[in-house]
View 1: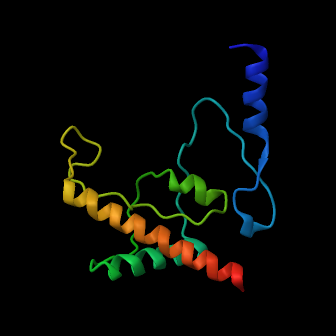
View 2: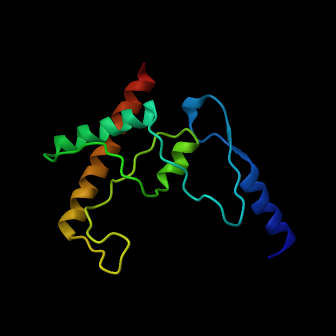
Length: 134
């Protein structure tokens, strides 16, 4: 890799980003190659709990039961939450044997997850539009 490319990558990794406009400030995120903690805890915040409520609302409107749970494990959502972005984990399909050679899901489960994700995005769009009108 050329020195110019390496410098471009370094500049991108070290720049401040406005990742969450509701914070009213930029957040400095840094990436460091090497080991260390990859997934910080996904701590519930007021904003994440509100987002969980919207997930439950749209899921139940589709005729399915939904509830927020904590069960350990790791999620990329925790990286977003650490930066102040409301985040939830678990919108994927119901699976069996997760992270094993026996892991599998089903076409209906994938369809159900797609319906929830679609309804969630539509509802968040409605909420964003009504908030910007206020």
